[in-house]
Image 1 (tube, chains in turn green, orange):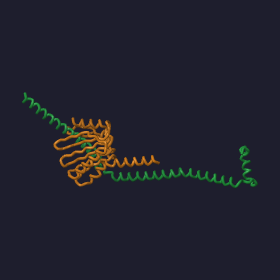
Image 2 (cartoon, each protein chain N blue to C red; image 1 turned 30 degrees about the vertical axis):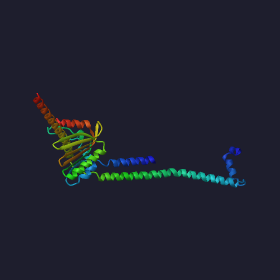
Image 3 (tube, chains in turn orange, cyan; image 1 turned 60 degrees about the vertical axis):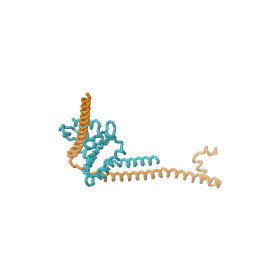
Image 4 (cartoon, helix red, strand yellow; image 1 turned 180 degrees about the vertical axis):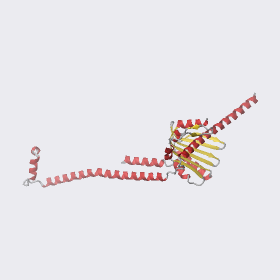
Length: 130
Length: 162
């Protein structure tokens, strides 16, 4: 083996092509099996990324379909604008905000009146007591 | 692969969880008989742009509400006096408020009328404002979505009350 290690590729090639050298049958079978195994493993390794890519592709397609479906559904459920004039829309928002503030105002007035009535009653009672 | 499915599941669940919102309620009731409905879309809010000040409040004071309006993304208003609709609307609004992270901002009761205003957001930004007003057999549902500056809204309401 040491001798063959020292040989150049050309020398090794010449020996391999020399038909007079007898190669044992078992060695030939072993080499073939080894080569077949290597070829099989190489094929497996090459197929794995392809399978992963296929799965990723299917997942991406599904995600896209779900996305499109949700988008269409959302578009279909989109209500129609009540106003075509932005001034009217603005006035509506302003009126709503005004409504909220008016209600807060009414509530505060009512609270003040109720508090005032309680204070008046308390004062009356205090005066009677005195 | 597991990660991919987890992300997809989370996204899908997120979408479904968001299903019960103001738009869903609006779509459900707006076409029913006996319901008055108003919807203002995000594109309409973009069109509103910069409009001049308009009057707000009974005192006639001019208040510029554009800082609020410019941040709005959706406006939904429903009003009805139909007993059945009012009951169902009230239930759906309760469902919306229970599912979200809404907080009661204000409650006002006056002459048998109850108004509750809820907000969803943080100390600075209101992402959604919901108002439910019940007066006798009448109900009004109002919802404004967007990125409303809380301080601007409070100041505007306070200014209009002066």
